[in-house]
Amino acid sequence: MTKLFAASAFTFVLMMGIVNLFADMTYEGASSINGPFLGMLGASAVAIGIIAGVGEFLGYCLRFPAGYISDKTGKYWPVTFVGYAINLLAVPALALAGTWQLAGALVIAERIGRAIRKPSVEAMLSYTTSEHGKGWVYSVNNALDQTGATLGPLLMALVLLRTGNYRAGYAVLLVSAVLALATVAVARMSFPNPTRLETEPAATRERFTTSYWLFMLAGACIAAGLVSFELIKSYHFSTTTIVTGQWIPIFFAVAMATNAIASLFLGRTSDRFGIPVRIPYINAELVSREEIRAGIERMQGLWDYFVQTVHPGTIQLEGDTAVGRVYISEFGRMRDGRSELNYAIYHDRYQRTPDGWKFAERTYEVRYLDTTPLSGSAPHAAGAPANPPTENTSSTKGRR
Image (cartoon, rainbow, N blue to C red; front, side, top):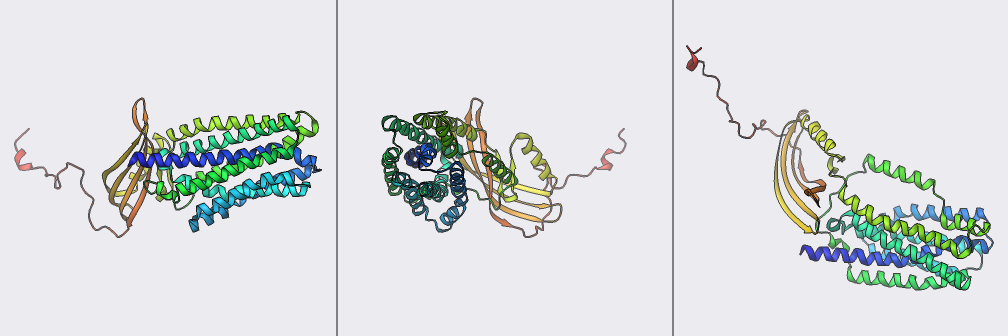
């Protein structure tokens, strides 16, 4: 059963990766020539910059409502279809654009379509991560994604070399767009409910951590400093003749190929050296041995007494990785008078290393919590008698 779940999960990851391969061939192929094409239609550098900025802004801002709607309705596939249709069909439509204003609107529409489908696709992929690890799942998908992003610009370079016609390039991309939509349909028929790919429910977090917001801030700063290659650099290359037309997509392809290669290595590395301990209940993450030790010592100082009983659950092996569950019952009273009785689960991921099996991640999830004050007293240490004998002074009289 474990191998069946793992095989099904990986098949879904692979299938969605193929979807994104064809999708990226389409819109990244177009991205590599959008700048020169808009310039040919009469758009200025300022206009191209505005189109790029508005497209990227909407391409990210609209992910929030799209993701919210997907989660609230559970209609992941319909949202995905709508997003892919807009994202992909806007590209070959550029072949028919007669003005830079219409072409710019189609470029922005392509970004909007990607914003609509991106959260629902990644939400569906998340149901496979308990089997294969978060880093590996997203790195495989991203590698296929970026493979398409490499092939698309190379195809555009070939079309420009043979015809010198941008419209012909956009028209050719209709083939990869149709293939992507067809693969989405096959994925929908094969996996109508991707939530069933999750072998065990993931632990939930009540709120985002400080480290999450710091990561988001860092991402925002990086994004603020980026310049759109496809709409600024490619336009600059073409207008200054630094690079000839058919070579511009090749520059873009090299960048995408680097991304594809790096993602596989970094994804596996992320799974192997991920966060060891997560405790969403108290919004804590402990990364290193030193942090884990310090965290335990800190918690020991909060309790008057604490008793935990651990019951081993299941371990599912898959090559050099494994996932497992451990069931916990615990109770205790804190020094400030609060009491807790919990039933919880450890969600574990393990990694085989040259030194044996190691924890890759442990997440603590509370399933039941009772804060009724405990009336009992602190238990004695294991093995110690309940009532230790007092010294019998009479038996020692006369001894020196």
